[in-house]
Length: 476
Image (cartoon, rainbow, N blue to C red; front, side):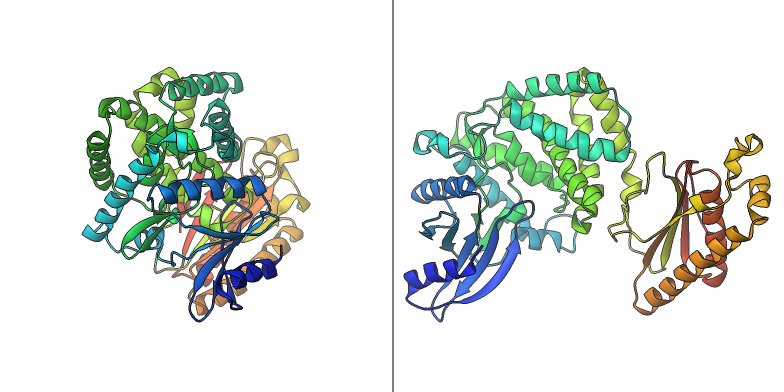
């Protein structure tokens, strides 16, 4: 991609060569944004090789602008259709304000902004569809079975499976089909942003403006409302959600003849679908690609899931999915990363055969992983088969071997130097993991010894020990 092409487009508009500064890359997309400025003008340039996605944006931006809706105007397009210039709406994202608030509930300013956003959403949703060329919708013209199946499979493969949730494939697919059938009974002829959340809302002169609608299509009303109110990072309280939902319904009834009761029949199922889609994305970007931003959002998304489940009577008809979701909710404590004044070391044992290296759920990106499979294995002796590395007999066996002592000493040397360095830098977290074939003998013993000796060296730090196969966890 060639920034010079954006500079040329800017110069054609302004008659001046711009100063160029790179902005953020949109999460999950190949679009790259730049701010181009001259003495008198500031515009945003975009480079995106997906021409079909660009064409959707060009068309929808034109339709929405003519309808008086707050969206950026496309001012110039390169002949390749891969480069374009749009108006600059500034940098004040609703996301930045809501995620940096100091109070649990929204203050009056934020509450008012969210109400403005929801009122404007109705204007987008109910726009005359005859104004839109449905062939421009990208990647699909309507939120259909295929769209929903993509989201549910994303969740299944990148979240359920990465959390080792056991499920019956056939029964889960049956439940997915039933859930999809329920969702598709809703009216699907409204405009649907698909990713309606605070990152895609800019505040200009205290008025909301909307970006990133190129994935829009025909769909239900409830999905976008749920996307905004259940955005994990925004962390809205139940009271604020209820307040905003009441505002939306009041506005909806005043502007349309839509039945609020019918809307509510589909609101929580759509909230569940959106939450599962988000968890799939967090699983892929966080657990699979190891991106910290997504890892730190998982706990909030699971809490959203927990809050939705009591409102879903429909779950009675999807027992396998319901069981999986309730099991996931039990994982919320794994993602609690409460700040602490004390340095915390998490030491864990795991099995290479049963789960492999455990994902780091702290948001810190992980730490040391030591492979104990080179050490003498008491598991080969039937006498030790039902014991683990916390039992005296296994300890006595391993303590007879010098290589075990040397192995632990080396791990301690690394850990000690790392902790000393981190303490000097005011960091507060380190993980040290030990793995062996079954996660029962050698890894457990090495984790225990390391925890004990590090506690002696650093009595003021918190040490969390997790034996994943034994399902034992404690602090020392």
